[in-house]
Amino acid sequence: MATNQKLSVRARLTISFVVAVAAILISASFGLFFLMHKSLASQAQNQVDAAISAAQSNLVLNSSAGTKTQILTPHGYVVLQLTNAAGTKVWAATSTISNAPVLAHTSGSLSSAGLKTVIDQSLSNQEITSQLSFPTVVTISTDKGPGLLFGFVYGNTITRSDHLLVAGILASAPLLLLFMSAMFWLGIGRALAPVDSIRRQADAIASTGLGERIEVTPGRDEIARMAATVNEMLDRLEASATTQKEFISNASHELRSPLTTVLATLERAQANPEDENWPGTAERLLLESRRLEATINDLFWLAKNDERRQMNNRTDVDLDDILYDEATRAKSLTKLRVDVSHVKPTRVHANASMMNRLIRNVVDNAIRHSSEVLTFASFYEGDEAVLLVNNDGEAIDVATSSQFFLRFVRADAARSRESGGTGLGLTIVQEICTLHGGRARFVEAPVGTTIELRIKRQS
Image (tube, rainbow, N blue to C red):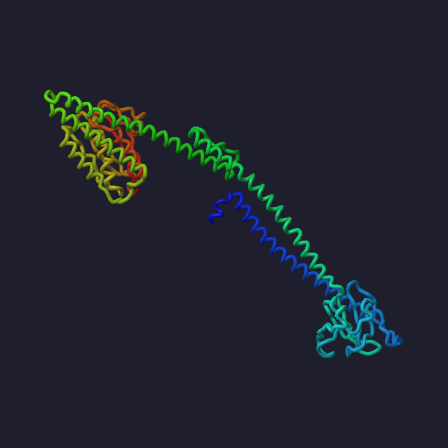
């Protein structure tokens, strides 16, 4: 396995191709050899049968020939030998074996349906019988009495054909395999060239910056789709990097401001401890510390949410109960009047802690911008639960209100800092809504500003 990993994809594919093609060539060669051998054997047997049939039709023995062997008409590679029924005398034979003794005998009786031929492998006949194959015998009637007509293929022609076929396969198969491997190597190289080009471009982009993009080839093949996918990934990486830089810059600014105030207050108090108004100093430090804590908590929540770690432990949550609790809290902290007459029973299946934070952030934002009245509402609309929180403060431009859900964006930066806003509250609201299949937005209101929250009932 370790050795394979050291080889390139091109080499591994070529090796796999060579092994597969070699297996196919070996199987095909065995199949070809078997079929050719069977075809040659069938042709040889047909020639023997045809020669015997022709000899039976045209055979006329010369009775005055005495003991001299009569010569039969040759039939290609087939030789014939006619013997007496006992298989002890040769009456006639093809010229090639005219001087040979009896070359075969039969097993079975003459009256049997089928005689079997057995070639005589005695040493005296070895030189001739070693070249005989496909023996066939039939009984025949002659003017000398009943006889046996034997037919053979002479000269090991099938064996020579088999050897030639094997030699041809052994000579051509490696060359064919080498040629196909070379073609496959070149073809894979051409196919992978765009992939290597994408790799080189990606390396260059990684070293120079995320502003460049991979060149997308025409068409919709796999290479073009891969290049498009890489470009989409680069778009996300660039956007993520930009967002991260902005986030770090904004977070640094937000954290630096309260820290600077704390340090300046402490240095001033340390320089003149007798003249310092310590109750006022403590109050100022406590306010800035709480602001710092709120910012850190919001940053921590966003970091965890970016990693998608907060979506466990969903349960049934009554949003109307949370709104009633927030109304009670708002009344205890401020002199605002809170109208909950439009709050209806509204339950969703969601993360309870997220729902509490969602509504708390929205209510805190509304409190900071209200003059006299807060108005809460909740109801169902289709498969969504809808929450409305209205404050009677200054109205915002709904058309451009989506910017307020961005990180560290405030409608009134100075007033929000003084009242404890971190610029992350509405960002968290939008994140929670999105995670629960909904959304947050500002909608038109007769008086002041209204934020609408939509949560899937079964997210």
